[in-house]
Length: 146
Image (cartoon, helix red, strand yellow):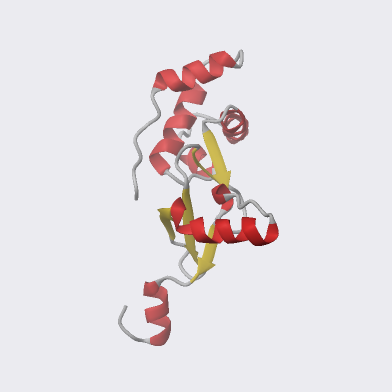
């Protein structure tokens, strides 16, 4: 599992205070759980902080996204996954094993430029997920080595 450095606690507190919101232990714990898990669904966050009920987790994730500390993406069907807002990357998701691989956002630069030039369409990389089959699952399916 990839680990990311935690957002400085004062960053969370200052962002909340700027919006007239209080720093609470629940907000601090939810932020820490998302930081630790990297791609975290609300259920995974609730598992990581069992002392906080699921409704509070959902509300807290929403608040933290609204103030610009978290961003969400969809890595398949079901609940969105949350990550630190500044952690921009492209996701590869395997249909077979559901593994997620993070790749640099600049991988899509050529596509973004082409879409803008030809279609006047601005790509939202924060929601850019590519689905397919990972090398391990492809090898298992064909019986060959990876």
